[in-house]
Image 1 (cartoon, rainbow, N blue to C red):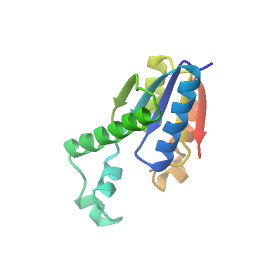
Image 2: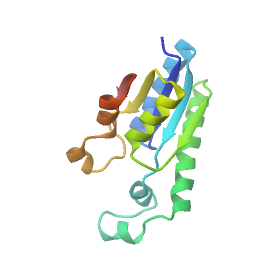
Image 3: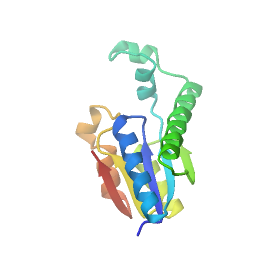
Image 4: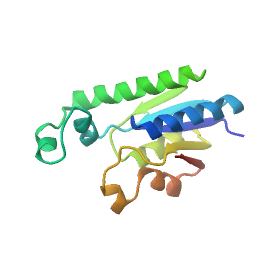
Length: 148
């Protein structure tokens, strides 16, 4: 049924749970598993210890710190997949809107399923603009699974 699965990772527990479920599905259908991460400087700043407010602005990470944090998220994803007995066929780390990057990658690799965590590390802005998962579900050309 599914041959190519793309999973969005942001380092959050819901995203990691989504990856574990995607690994289970990939195993059942012998599907190729791909992971996508779109690092967000604000999220990296909080991970580095910034507190909401002015500290965030004064402790914004450098592009190298953002890239390194993103590589860590991808490495953790690859390890989660390995622990579940799956290999990762492809991965992407790219700056931009998470939903747009995920959909673009899914289209490029011919994904027939995109798996995301329902709530990740998105900000309060997602309440106004809509979450990444909602946007993926709305725009994707393939099946979508949002994991609680």
